[in-house]
Image (cartoon, rainbow, N blue to C red; front, side):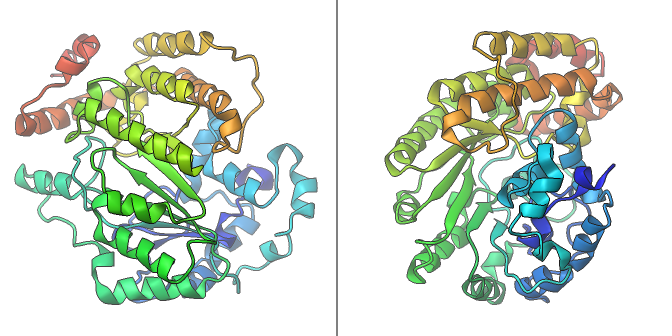
Length: 424
């Protein structure tokens, strides 16, 4: 791997606070032991960013392949736009002209510093696990509802601690860091579910009180199960908002995978958000996490998004839980899914194959959707077969279904032979 293939500028302007209140160097970084890093309880955010991330910057400058960056490398291998490519774009660096654009980047001198005096420009804030959904591919750290269920049925012994932003001292430390970060441009919030997380509303109110809503773009992701008009009214006061709406397919299978929701209600809420976003000139995306199940109906999301001129994006190819990966589909079954996606792509003019890096730009939303669909075709064609994980998948869903009184074959009868062969 060359320097061009491994370097990412993100550590020079971006950081993350995860659900447990611990720091991470990137929103796209592969999850390791997320509680082994410094936390907001013992280290100020700016101290972590300026000094604590120095080893990551050093590794980048040495051209090393970081373990935490694995998911970006995988995305690029299959033609999906990675977080690394998006962050390069923000600094004016293009992979197809890497040397020249690196030398002309306004960040080139800053890249020489491993300990920086800069303050973050781009933060991802994971607010905790307040959530009213229990998605089958999620984890207790991101869903209180799933955590309670996991404890009840014996998958875990203890539920995660309450959100870090419910601790007044930690919350005030975060707000102080926001006020001190004079260069901050973008804050992206995820949960849990942001709209039911008390800290989200308090942060929005604070940003408005501090008059930062005129200079900071707020992004957030919602699971399309709730509506809070008071938060909508706060968001309307911001100069720019990036709205992410999580959905897996426009099909009842969405109810099974995103347990706790109803697809008809979710579509109605989605259309409410789209209307407000159009009135307010917000940027909108549908956020997907394709699994072995939902990839069968992935074309329904692409179709909806294409007709509404809305980009579709996943943060990565699903990595964890491993038995939920689309690559668990056996090679013998994959052609059926590939054909479904190919048939959808062929319905539209898809001759333009130039890669779109700015995936949020509304002018290229339809091209971006086709590009994303192609990345999943490439993934299914080339990602190694992990069907040996099918028995673990079956054991897991049988445990959940006994708790939820539902069954995957009600929603996905096409998988009956596949799942029966693995012990379902």
